[in-house]
Image (tube, rainbow, N blue to C red; front, top):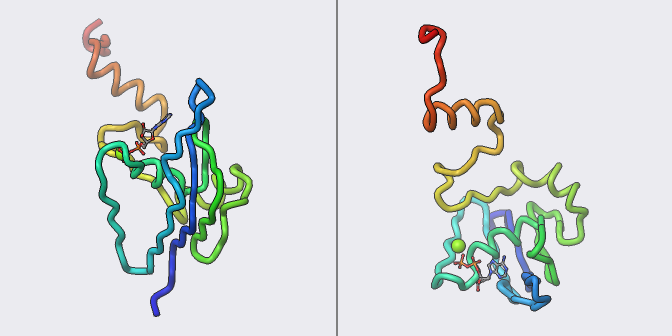
Length: 132
Ligand SMILES: Nc1ncnc2c1ncn2[C@@H]1O[C@H](COP(=O)(O)OP(=O)(O)O)[C@@H](O)[C@H]1O
Ligand SMILES: [Mg+2]
């Protein structure tokens, strides 16, 4: 049998809105991904696909909060792990999230100076050496 790379059981996560309401976007979700296999998740807009993808990385930031359930990545249960440890040891190496329109989004590994230069180049005319 192929090795299970990702196993999620009964994962529940919620958004806590600024009005202190709980929005359970991921409610008791279980799934398994074996090595060499792909899993597609389909559903209408707003059903919780993106929230599920974010949630199963085990790294939460407000207004999204972990509630219950388990996430096992390559045999390691990350559900109760410290967020900083998850960020240092799991994210980007064991699991990663590629958002929609990723090619248009900010590259988190790029230098800020390169980003600013690109932005200036495409928005305003910067004097070049030959112009002066
Ligand atoms: N920051 C947020 N605060 C409260 N509710 C949210 C927030 N982001 C998303 N939601 C709600 O969570 C649900 C799932 O959203 P989402 O995961 O983006 O769906 P999908 O990716 O399937 O379109 C939606 O009902 C949405 O309104
Ligand atoms: Mg989405």
